[in-house]
Amino acid sequence: MLNISKSGLYKKVDLSGYKSTDRVFHRKHYKRFNQFLKVFAIVMVIILFLPWTQNVTGKGFLTTLRPDQRPQTIQSPIPGKIERWYVQEGDYVKRGDTILFISEIKNEYFDPMLVERTGDQIRAKSAAVTSYEGKVNALNNQMDALATERRLKLEQARNKLLQAKLKVQSDSIDLEAAKTNIKIAERQFERTEQLESEGLKAVTDVEEKRLKLQETQAKLISQENKLLASKNEVINAEVEINSVAVSYIDKISKAESDMFTAQSSQFDSEAQVTKLQNEKTNYEMRNEMYYIHAPQNGFINKAIQGGIGETFKEGDPLVGIMPSDYDMAVETFVAPIDLPLIHLGEKVRIQFDGWPVIVFSGWPNLSYGTYGGEVVAIETFISDNGRYRILLAPDEDDYPWPKDIRVGSGANTIALLEDVPIWFELWRQLNGFPPNYYQPVGAQETPVKN
Image (tube, rainbow, N blue to C red):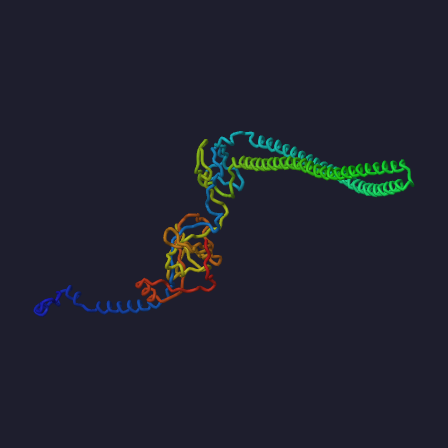
């Protein structure tokens, strides 16, 4: 039947009478098969020239557009112990609602009257500040009085010095007069003595002139003593001026020293008052931290710290909350080789997990169940998974996203690039080349960090 040997059996035996032989050796189906192959080849050639939309696929999950809309945990800035819960998991809370009440675990804050006693310390220190202020004012008045007294004393001493100088001048004039008188007395004595030797004057006249000369000499000596005494008084007056100045400098310096000491104590008390006021404010704010409030409207997801009496450190998460008002977005990741093909403002198709979809990545018009997205942020540093993070927002020109999708669910993304023939795309895939680089119209060139 296979006609392998050179001597064909069909040449010696007549097989035309058998139905199976007619069916096997009937060549009509060869023509149909050949026609099918020709038509298939033509169709494949035509398909190779059909347009194909290049794309970059990524896998990510749903998130929120703004960081303050994402799920978060609520922490306590101070360590404490849980005393009472005001909510349970799944409750809706508004911003400022009380979630739980905690108490202190540090012994320096155990005193329930801590704020009031700190206020008493502030008042006591404030009174000390007032007292020091009064002491400083009293010392200032004392220094003013000493300055006035010094001025008067110095003026008095200067007047005394002036009087002594005037007395020196007067005694100097009297001394000159005494010198003149002694010269006159000497001349009179000499003339009387000469006249007595000539017999014109009596001896008594000579004795009188000698006596007068001696008196004049005595007056001269007396006047010289007075002049020396007056000069001594001038020196004493100058010494007294210096003594008054030094004495009051010492008194004023001592008063200034006392004033500076009082001012130092005043400033120290003011610093202590400020420190106590700061501590009081901190205590008041710490008391307010005993009540943990909701930072925004949302739903309580999970109580991370449970029970009553359980202690925790500052910064430990206590409860998780999901904001109720948020703008949905998709966080997807692309390979580093595809990052240059992604631009801000570029349109992206999104497939949400759990939603029926028929996807033809190269023919987006034939796809069903995908939704439009727009690139709003491109991370410029690679993530831990070895890919770059892209943030997508809903495309306002497309169908709105489903309302029942939730943050955290998965999503597949398809970034549509330019159209190329299918044969080119096959050739590119076989050679491992990246899609064609292009800049879409309306997209931004410079990415931003997210």
